[in-house]
Image (cartoon, rainbow, N blue to C red):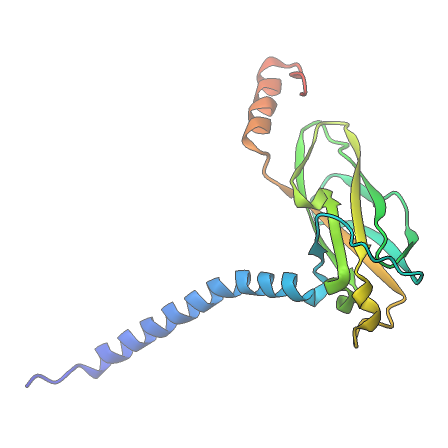
Length: 197
């Protein structure tokens, strides 16, 4: 009977461990994202098609914050610094973005709320952060976000004493969608801007 090489056995075990750890690391990102969206952990907000029917007399202050990742050339700011809404009532706020460059720039916004305990009760109905944004050279846009705070926040053990919620967005540059890449190439080749649809 042949004896197995202990070095080969060790190598196989190490390869198995590396593959297992790689698989766990790959699966952890979508699992963590799912967990945060379901629970609001880490300030991740919820989404809804419309505000609920219950509106409380109790109010809450919503503060708005904006930042950009390093290298993002846009100017980006909230159009209001804060507003007070009744809990359960739909609120509407606007952010402004401006592309001061001479080229089209695409961006995507990441977001969270603070305090983190409020994330499970802060619902976005419509938001510019749901899609990629492309600004043409010199273009300035106002982008809406509609939201409401779930009335269940007032009975939650951890979140019921929340007096204000800060909604924060960070814009970072992404690759232009294919159709915008073609338009940018046409502008460069022809020396004149193509019409923007």
